[in-house]
Length: 156
Image 1 (cartoon, rainbow, N blue to C red):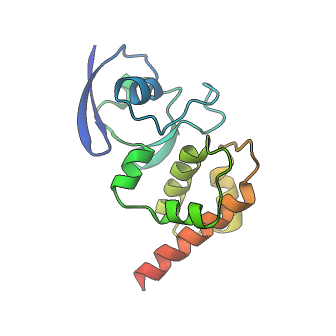
Image 2 (cartoon, rainbow, N blue to C red; image 1 turned 135 degrees about the horizontal axis):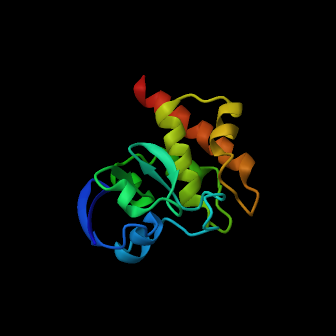
Image 3 (tube, rainbow, N blue to C red; image 1 turned 30 degrees about the vertical axis):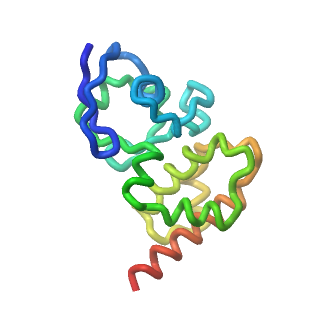
């Protein structure tokens, strides 16, 4: 089945079964490998992408359900030059193994788009669906606060 997807601002025509999880189309068909497979049950957050601006788990959503919607992967986040988060991630030395980080950044980007100056509680709530086996949660929170400060400074 041929399905038209809008990924990272580009229309992509893909051949896939309608029930193929979006994650596998992103990784295997489109070769955008920044989005990771973690658990396959939408529990860990490694596969997080944006669907019409909202953070979703791509491992459980069928590709047919997202046809015609705006999908952004970690690669597209960089293309849009929304890299204050990536800059903050580096400056706060968040990454250890790095496996979960694209999902973490995508969830954080959705949070900051909705709430440009989140409290620690709002950060914890928004990020609760993302698991970091290395336990870098305090650094993740600090990086999100730093990215929020960058955005605030840029608006002054």
